[in-house]
Image (cartoon, rainbow, N blue to C red; front, top):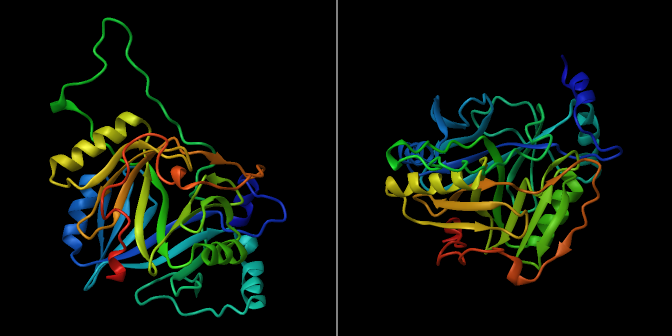
Length: 318
């Protein structure tokens, strides 16, 4: 079945030229083996792919991230998925906006459309199957009945394994400028923002509250990746499995206001974060979500502690 034929069965907002998914991201790390250990403990499958490593959710063939070793931690690129039928329109759209296409990075096998955003971040739009969810993710925290123990012994606690990538967040020197670029060029839509400090964007063809987020800093950089799990219990168990392996820097458990998801963030060895996320709001293709400018008190939590010192530090700008 071709991508164009398959699109008939996919959600597609009429008269909306926009990306449908965050397909994957790329990140350079100082030590690939150390990164593999971190993400393996987090519950992902790490596959060696030549000189790189790919991040996969167990039981899912989709590659959600590509890691490469370099001198320091550095954001690489973002690949967004588009429908085959929208490819010519996107090429014309970039031409009208005078956004030049650039060659793909060294080692890339993709024939997508590559260009830079307003801060120089490398972006790709490529024809891909829709990897963003088609509906709100399943969520459950069912207790056992009377006369039955609901929790297993710690020695037999299940391993938390994320189901898929939910979103990523990047640092930016100008939140409003970045929102204008990603809405105008990629067709993403503003979900909510907190003044000029943070903003959250969703896809027009059905996606979670945000597939892409941005937070203010002195310049560009990678803040966190977020990974979908099925319950608050899985988030708690995930936090425990990270702590047991010595990854004791993190933040949570809590619940966000913007997106409504429950969360725990584990901090990697280079100051970025990997988030366990559950029960995020979903915005279907036929929904006109009303974006709001929220007060500072809504930035982080509905309940839970405030983020620890250094949580918002952009180590790529130091």
